[in-house]
Length: 291
Image (cartoon, one colour):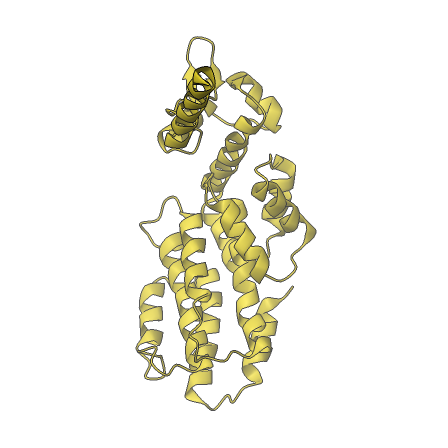
């Protein structure tokens, strides 16, 4: 779906002579500038927009146009600094989506939003966030974020929908399906993300599938992983080690170096509730013996 055209039509339907509408139009155009890398100093470009007298400097008595300006500005600001700024080598996509959701869903009570303008401006943001979640690393927050996104976003294409379903259910995402999704993503910022960070995103996909293994296996040899996932990936052992260190696999997961086997086991001590349950059972047993 051509959301850029829908956005343009929504903006043009307003009072184009109004300074706030003009600034909102500039903010919408900023996404195209970022996607096409038309301005190498995008941070300064955004700061100039932020300095415009029409940009809301406070949330006091905010109207809907001012709210949209803040949201669209924040969307481009976080995309740039989280994905494309010179210091970014490995985008933290779940952190990015979490930040966006927090801001977008925080609508002041005094602001009344026009549904048509809301969907025209924010539906593409929700679809883009769905792309980010699919491309993200194995983060335990994904399932909750997907559930929230599905309440907000418009219908998406079947490939995106299927990938979201598999990720939310912690099931393997086949390489061919993932590759189809990556090629089908038509959001301009997602396209640039894929072009700039393709290797990182491939690594994330491997992590996603490895994180599903404990659902199906108590242990598995590392050499079986390429066959299981239907793809080759260099040094899978280092990927698993990194996931163990970063807490992306269950506690107690280890690699048996001699046998090249990944063992999934939970070495955590029993919880307080479990201990209490055992004590209660012992007390009940003793009571019955006394009786």
